[in-house]
Length: 193
Image 1 (spheres, helix red, strand yellow):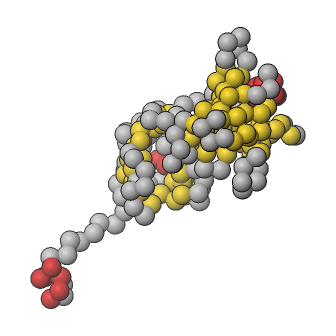
Image 2 (tube, one colour):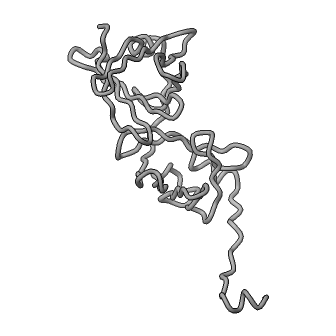
């Protein structure tokens, strides 16, 4: 120890746990926020747990992971035989609890049913959902178009946004709800029915 360590009583830091790939894989899959319906996906890439394929999560324990000032805490230990809910906490966003949901692989008819034009009076904006070559794209954004990736039933991610589609009377898709970290549940009504 140095004199500074003795005076300031610097705590020793433990080395992060070395979690095996199969332990990390037990956390993988789509989850839905109980707060706002947004989607998050945990996956393993290169032996590291990732959030939404962009945020590398460093283990602090078997159930706690960090990226900068963000925390992801899984509710059960690895190898629990079932996927677990997790909590996400960051200084920018409020704490949100995410629960596991089954992956969704929509067929051509489901994609066709969602394609259309959607309007929100709250933001005075019209977005189009376009079907091209078996994929949906969100158009009309200031940043250009975004590919929509299926997450869970009637939900897609498009960049940082989650798009939830809801059926109206008669069963046809009648509205879209958009959620991002700073916009929760912005409702769009379908224009072309």
